[in-house]
Length: 333
Image (cartoon, rainbow, N blue to C red; front, side, top):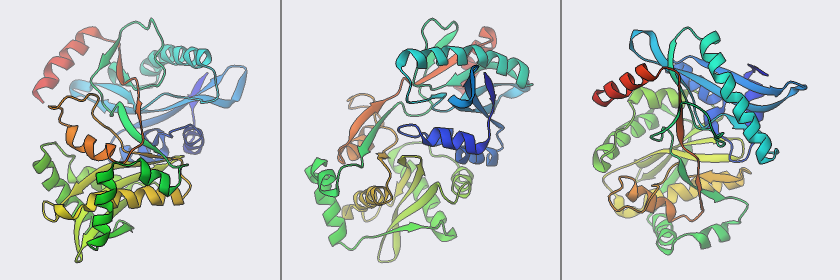
């Protein structure tokens, strides 16, 4: 059985799973609402026990022209951890059957497809297509049950050296309360970083609304030298995991290695506050020298940890003709 659940039910369930997904939380729902998106929460219950959630997910409405659109559940649906694999696959299959009902009965938008990123992909699902990753499917994670000495030992020698160098050079690290002036520093630095490293950043409004969406789940960290902000990170905490989501740094003072000390400070804070994992949120999927993610992947891997790869992003296609039409025209936008 599928029914709408409360924010608290969603958070309780999502935070209880290993490598807790903040994308499946009321924090992310609030952020999407601030962006003007409609969001719904659903829980899956056994017909014989309607008090225990076995699976849960957010649905985000993505609008397209002419009242068309699609529905998207980020890093979900989430299936309860303490179930055997066959049971998880059975639940996933049942959820797929219910997706169509949700699209037809609950939403007025003309849905072309349903996009999802579940950990368990049932076999023999008709009209399902693997597509380009929407969220990073491969990431790097630190196990914070290790003590600080072990975490440092697992790092690349150069990373440890850079952390010590930044300390010696007097880099000051601050976990802020998102003061207005520091948000301005982040927006300024992310623009410079995107130009320097050749990637497309989100709009300033996107980051502003993300930082405003929660007082408990998201923080802005900064590194300063001589009272000047030279590096900033957006960090999310939810359930058992702290996630390094966005980062930006100055073109100046790069020899001071502030990003290394900033990461280490965030890792230490996560450990001190009893989080189990630290997620670096996305690394390159291959060792291709031409991969655009190669540079920051090398930086992240310097901190050690283990790699975790999710199945990726899939579309359940409901209208083949309009789906083909959508994929053709999105190339131009």
